Length: 239
Ligand SMILES: NC(=O)c1ccc[n+]([C@@H]2O[C@H](COP(=O)([O-])OP(=O)(O)OC[C@H]3O[C@@H](n4cnc5c(N)ncnc54)[C@H](OP(=O)(O)O)[C@@H]3O)[C@@H](O)[C@H]2O)c1
Image 1 (cartoon, rainbow, N blue to C red):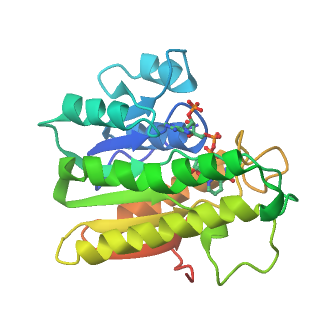
Image 2 (cartoon, rainbow, N blue to C red; image 1 turned 180 degrees about the horizontal axis):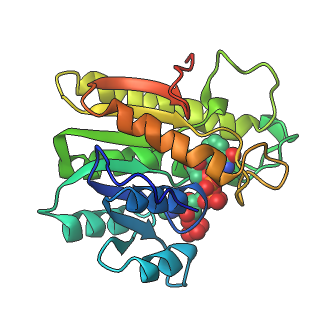
């Protein structure tokens, strides 16, 4: 996918963490299509969709490596990127390990911990460790979910996944309080239910229905300091 028609972007240099496939890879394609230089990260040594795309956009898309659950790997990435500057840091990596109908009390403790670590702790660690690379007037975005909204939870389902995204929202809120005088835009984003490996085939949206709109929303927030929790169309979500 990709939006090859618009060639302007408010974020000309972009770092996407968790870009091997799915929404992260599509964000790389969309920003590259709009004229940005993009670094996207993968983990492991295998070839991914991002490698395929980067091969077609040499000089535009660069591939880096990090497993955000490994503090040493995050540290090594920060060191490799030291001295560089990005207009946008977008942390997209996330996992969902339990089926929709499994209530929280029945999820294996190990899966609960893995989901909470990757989706909440590792994401905020990534923001903390890489934030100095972001231009002082740039944007830090993280992929939350509409399911992270406590106020909007009227259906249960994916109970632990929901809780990890609520925790992520709370951690970003603390970050924003500690950085209240920063000029950066801070974004928690909800892409909608999208057909990816995580979203599954029953999801309502194709990647192309979600990501160009979500990128438009990110673009519109540059220069607006403070934390916002937004859906792909820019509507504010209740906490
Ligand atoms: N799809 C939806 O309907 C939906 C809705 C709301 C929110 N979201 C959120 O959007 C984000 C992307 O989801 P998706 O649908 O694109 O899922 P996906 O297709 O399963 O892709 C997940 C991505 O996260 C990466 N990742 C997972 N754990 C990682 C780790 N420890 N370190 C580095 N990268 C890691 C994966 O890398 P590997 O290839 O190496 O596994 C992959 O690139 C997630 O945060 C998800 O919670 C998705």
